[in-house]
Length: 289
Image (tube, rainbow, N blue to C red; front, side, top):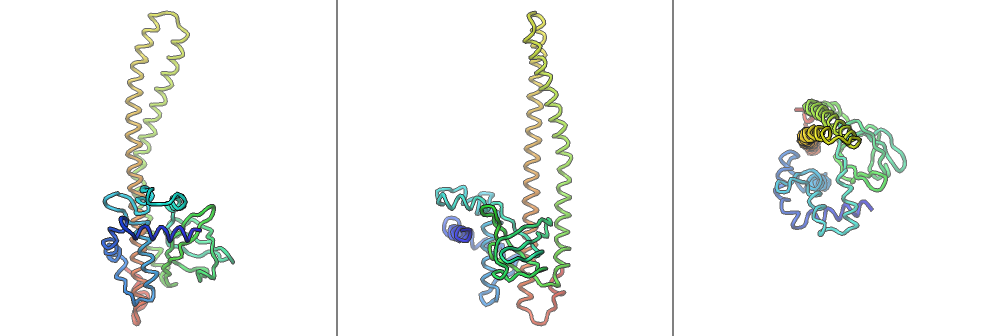
């Protein structure tokens, strides 16, 4: 079951050698999410969310990967059955969700970051969901369905407008970055067109050579072919370099966007925690910049 796989993953991640950065990571986490105290009502859920962030979100500075990716790449540390399950966890969706529809054994949610809808398996009674609820959660794929990890940060009704405005800022940054990719994509398309044209010319000349018996003409065409092969090699090199740069930049955009989303959710978690602890502070004075 998905719950067992997640529990095993957490156990592995919180044991050596994968737990070496745990204390440093907690300081990083609390820089954005605030200090977590044992007498907080939401202490257990806050710690669970921290561990999820540590495993799924935080980039290990040594390996330039998440802890989950490091564990997967160290196959000897994991049983084949567990490895098969946690490989799918790399496609997890961490988001701010709003409930659209509640059914007996499933719920439909909308991820506010991209407006994508997800049908999630799980009893609504188990999660205490109600339509319109805004919350932070993480979806894990399993077989042909998706499930929440069961660790949430619920935000009050009056916070929705502020949350959506913050998401809009992040989305705007991402779109601005993605626009910077367009010139590179156009250049790559142009270079690919040149390459395809050259390959086509080479093919036609090769076919022509096969039909000739005149050595002089064959030699002349062969000279042209040698020149075209050199041109093709240059186009292939340029195409490869452009594609590599596009891939690297797209990866950086994706990572930056993921980091911005995570930081926003940590900031909102901090606000929710402050609201939980406060007695005389109004919601509008907490959910604000």
